[in-house]
Image (cartoon, rainbow, N blue to C red):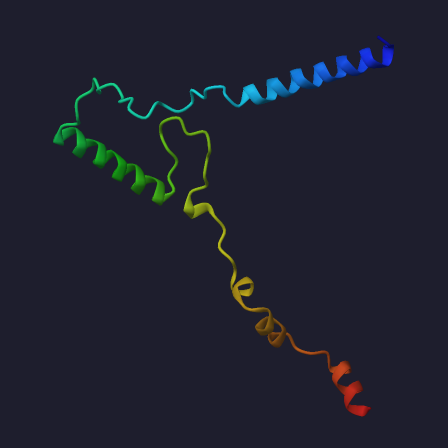
Length: 118
């Protein structure tokens, strides 16, 4: 057997082994999804009582109201907000539109007289 034939047969064997590995990898089972008829284990915890539901609802409502007011949380909050009284409000000049601000400024008399003479 010549060397070229031997290299060719080894190459074909390698290609066949790689092809077999690729084809067989498609048959691997994926265990990330449960089987069709597998049922979950029954829950060990009981349902909430009406008193517990009311307490949880009241806590959520009070938390929502507190966050809407902008006050920082008292438990575990690391961010500090400025109270609404210390925030700066825009001045009257800042609230005016740009057109109103330019109309409020008097025009230079030299500009008007120079354009009128031309």
